Amino acid sequence: MKLEVLRISSQTDSTSGILFDVTDGKRKFLCYTIEDEYRAIKQKHETRIPEGEYKLTLRSEGGFHSRYTSKYGADWHRGMIYVNNVPNFEYILWHTGNTDESTSGCLILGDSQTSNLVQSNGFVGSSVNAYKKVYPIVRDAILSGEEVTVEYIDYDYIEGKTVVEPEEEKSYIWDFSGVPEFHGPFMVKSPMIKHDDVKLWQKKVGITADGWFGNGTKGEVMKVQNKLDIEPTGILDLNTWKFTFAEKKER
Picture 1 (spheres, rainbow, N blue to C red):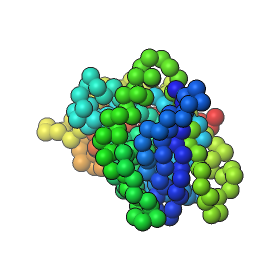
Picture 2 (picture 1 turned 180 degrees about the vertical axis):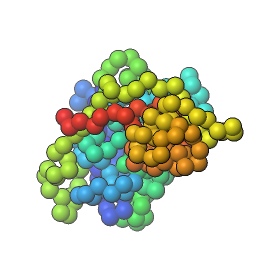
Picture 3 (picture 1 turned 90 degrees about the horizontal axis):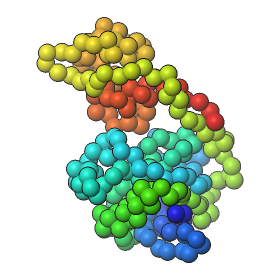
Picture 4 (picture 1 turned 90 degrees about the vertical axis):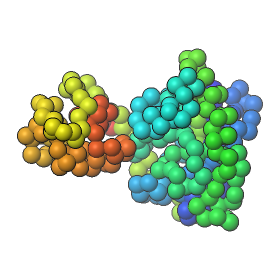
């Protein structure tokens, strides 16, 4: 399956677009989209991803996955639509919402659209309906073993945009081979938790390594989660553990 996000209106606060299924050269309209605005230099939570072709998979961990599983049911929801290997971005998903305030580089789906020339932060309506329509199509293709890709195309003119930007020339992968074994999760509890894994994590991030998981360690976990674009729960879970110890390598 091959999909295409055609960006049709790039404005200062948002990007309006259209999602197509272009498998086998047959162009089929799926829904409208909204994203963050274009920026030559990435600003966290305020920048759309670079144009290009990306592989889509299902991500079955993280806060979005937990919430959508609870909302839609485990039989229907099998993981978030996940855009893989986006240069300088992590955890880019497709989900519901209405404006660019609902996203941090992710793609919001909708069945109707208000021009972002009229409403600066853009707007898509009936987002849940659009998601319920698009998600099963992508989900079933991925689960069947089919390769699913999406191409983001900057269709309209953007003032000051170069053909290839310096930050877009590099891409990275995570090497998890050296990640220590994990025995968590760990969180603030009464009585307070003390564990060698907590001590090892504290040492890795450069705070007092006493092994106790108190409010200070919780705060540090949230800082690390924010830095890694992980939902800041304050819980030292497997995902946070893996990315703390993983090595980020240039491709």
